[in-house]
Image (cartoon, rainbow, N blue to C red; front, side):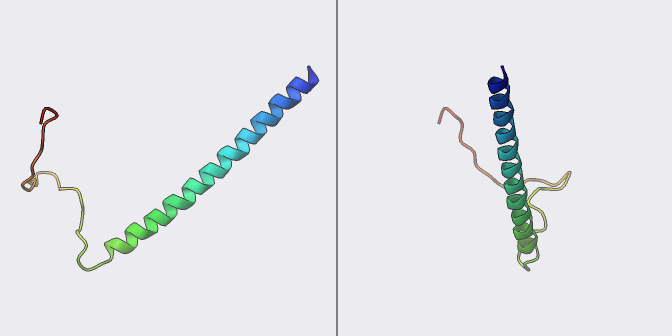
Length: 68
């Protein structure tokens, strides 16, 4: 019983450390992405917002159905 319990606790500990490492890597990546977006938005020719405001008409576009 004790070796099984030790193995189980060790496995849970390893999974927790792996989860923490992946979470920290994701936070670092998102911070870098946010910095890049902020730098990009400071350019002179950058659009003010990629999303249309409420009530604003969408520009011309084309779409293809799934049937072709």
